Length: 201
Image (cartoon, rainbow, N blue to C red; front, side, top):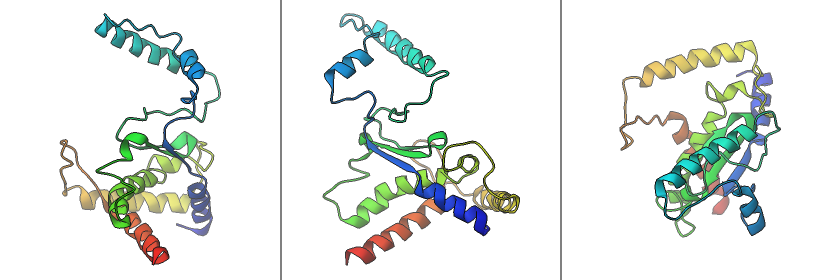
């Protein structure tokens, strides 16, 4: 990576917005805001399947309401209870719902090495998405544009293909029938834990 692209990548990394716990829109601490948000959703305690249909239609309605409007940066693409995380390229943000901030990924009572090993793997994985073959296409403002130099883009593609070939024959079962690739994640976790260890001694 040449100096121009490296500086732009550092700026992108510095500007990644981190969201943790729950969305701020709608305001979940304000009962009136919640009631207004769900005002178009009708729930009938005697109609389970109808409730599911109406909830799905309501979610679709909310998606269509976003069309042609500036995105509310406080909304999320996941519910807070979901045990997952994601990087959103157009917003240059990483989101960690409350659901993943618990055992077996995180605990305030665990020693640092366990949190860095478990939750750190998740965080590092999401961070790599900011610079993978899709995330690299968005700059620090979430704009879809070529912000790397041609030389850096070509070198990236060459290395991406090399890494893909290297690991195409290696599979690690993730317990759900999928494959896990850990090259970038392990390096980032080790590096961050090393810094943590040095500063906490």
